[in-house]
Amino acid sequence: MELAAARGEARPADRVARRKVTRLHRAAEIGLAALLLILASPILLLAVAAVLVFSGWPVFYGHVRVGRDGRPFRCWKLRTMMTDAESQLNRDADLRDRYVSNGYKLSEDDDPRVTKIGRLIRRSFIDELPQLVNVLNGTMSLVGPRPVIEEELQEFDPHARELLALRPGIVGAWTSHGRDRPSYPERAQIEIEYVRKRSLRTDASILFRSLPVVLRGQRPGS
Image (cartoon, rainbow, N blue to C red; front, top):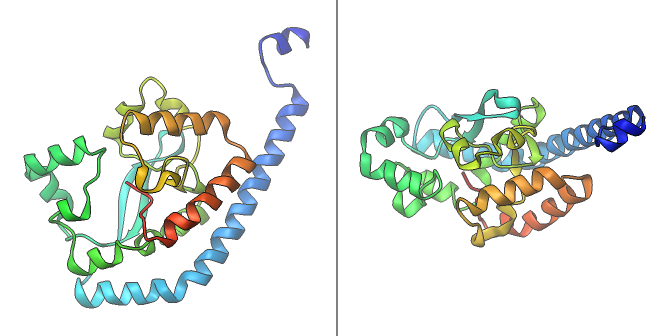
């Protein structure tokens, strides 16, 4: 037992306690995600109708991201771009260069793929609301590192495995910086530090700090 303690290994009682905290955390976020989805459903339905009328089908878009333990999953959003947005990005070398250099995202003003109705919806948090379904199905958490694409994992080397130890989040330590969100490599440092220090108190603090960011219509990021 002393040898295990010296090596920093968790005792059986500690592991049981951690599992209980993890189950409590998961149960709390499922309940909160379900409540938020119910409360937001009128706004979400209006947004769905607007996308359908002004941009057509499909209404939702599931972008493939890397999830917990490296498993790919679809991160759901309301579709705010043209239906061939991905192929446009791959065809246009200049657009892709700007996308990568800007932290694997483009601003609305610099992205010709965003539709008119999409530009309006993107001024709020509404297009991210479908990610509450990701929380309910277990592929995301309310709070965690923002989901990344496979190519983006190189920005986290040599700590990518630490990043993938948790479910990605709708909001997180990086997104709570609001308009002052840094790009890589500072973003990677913020996310990895969160992974190492994560606790129920930390997550509650991030949710609290993220509320005014969302109310100001600032997006959670890529």
